[in-house]
Image (cartoon, rainbow, N blue to C red):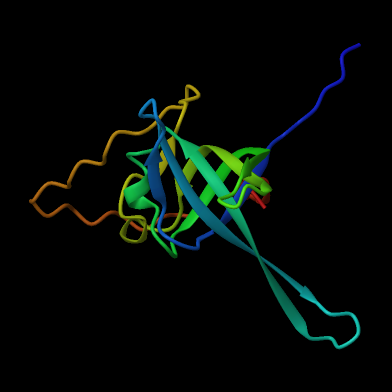
Length: 159
């Protein structure tokens, strides 16, 4: 029987700097950015709340149209896989780095905060996406009746 393995990373955090896009020799776009995630816990001895920030480097291939929206401070969702690689630095020393190779990047927050499309996926997975909302007609609409709670029981409440 073949063994299985999983290499999947999900991050929700804030961008630590504006994304930077460079191009390989074959003109493939490589966008790099860092995501800050926070962890909060209560110290058992002192009873004080503590917080820790973790910085994760991310790489997005063929994401040149995404980079302008990935600006410092924006909250994003990143889904991808971990990759460890090595390279030689300018002094000839071998350097190892681990980063998230992003497959899906979604801007979180309101429309005013996002500044662009709400979702940017590298490879569509057959998800249905709604068309842009049309503007409401200029004529004033009739005021809708307030919602009624008739016919709603405890079994209808989702929580």
